Length: 74
Image (cartoon, rainbow, N blue to C red):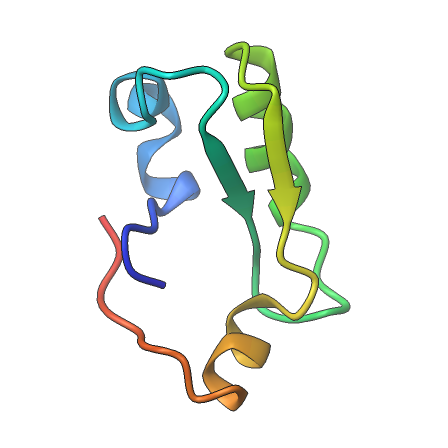
């Protein structure tokens, strides 16, 4: 997903990578609808004070199935 941050690789520097605006939309997702790995990233964002944290239920598999743009994450 364009602009995505790989939580597992960047959790120690998440505060520096997320937007400065704590009201900015932060979308957490993982592999697909049955994956729960997104929960750790969503919790981390909320713990940092982000108030607009959403879940992309379809995950990356649904994103790709919808024909949406993909690019390597940071």
